[in-house]
Image (cartoon, rainbow, N blue to C red; front, side):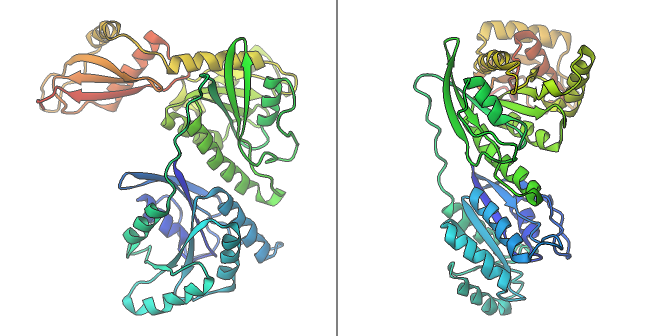
Length: 441
């Protein structure tokens, strides 16, 4: 599991500029007007092989009918609760402001690692003004200019030193299948866990975000052992629903890293949204098995036509994960609970499937004979020499070619799709790697 780095601070100190600088691309909207970042932004970053998740916590400007201090404290607490390291960004041009002191107080009480960042230090003359941020009581500030990139490399070096080492996930001694129940707040994740277990093992409430932490529940169904990870959102007030959705997603990312199979639970009444797209993308990137389950199916028009319409819509919306099985369940009535567990077991088997080299190459020979790889740009023909499965979980196949002068992604997708048609791999992502013959270009 990668570390989570949260960028906090009062409005217009350059948080989004620093966020873009850290991830190496312009992802967050940057504007001089305070409060532009209202939705939360996250991205994976890499600093010399050390991977981590960066969180841009905008939206520190409250609604007009809500006091500033209350909004600042709530936002800071949400950021602090999820992060391993906090970057408290300040503006050297304005000096220490009351809101800087308020944010520092919240961070200090939480006991988390924090780095004070004095931003907008565009020249040596401004460095003397930066030292006054030592009055926040959180150590000497790191002086940078996020806009110009000044000293940002030093900041990243310091950040890499402060990050906790990734905690290796211990293998279950009894071989239990680790299943993460993921999804937006209030889609019924805790209710589903209780329905699977057959008793109330986690708190269920109509208030979104009742579950504050991931909860593991061990069960055995039809001789198969499972470890269920419930990943619900944070408790929240109605006005901070966007914050809860974001931070529940960061918690889900950590749980996905621990699991073998993720069950994405979707509210059948509300349907799919961008939040589900982000979660599925994370599952696919992590190489985990995936099952999609529409919950609250008892509350919608349950006809064969409506089921087909839901499936078509899901396949279109989540087309980059069209290999995932889709189920219709009701945690309230326990409909489809047995089917979820059976499908989860099957997907786990597909993720762990290994194909013998002989059988694999017989299939690959047929695949390449039907549709050979396209020729290189210089007209040189391209041939697949042989293929081997490098690993399982996820199934990863390495194709060795007579040269490595470029194979288009479309042909890699063709290889992946044909392998899936032949060996099924339902619910499992497939990795395809293409290499030239050793010693040859």
